[in-house]
Image (tube, rainbow, N blue to C red; front, side, top):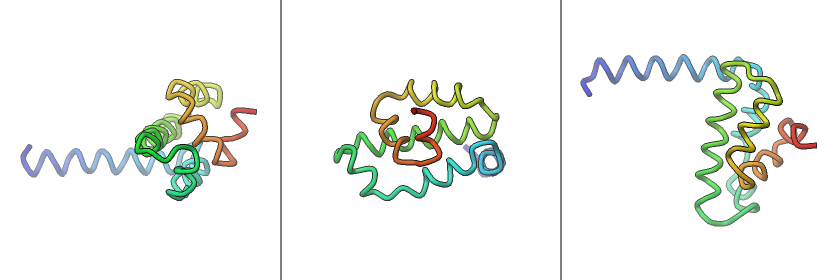
Length: 99
């Protein structure tokens, strides 16, 4: 990858991130990214939790960017499995999806 292609991809990714943080789930995304390592480790202490945490952040970012409905977001989180649901339940604004 040459430097120009790298810069182009970086600009695209930065625009996507801005759209996510300005989208429907910006509060949820901010709270999710504010979880501490201890919060995440409380669910499971192995490295799987960090991988699921990263996947969950990606799902919530994309949901925010494209303004998914709450039902669609819940479904996408459920697709990630029980560990991701457990992490999501640590975030007050995402917990309401699973009540």
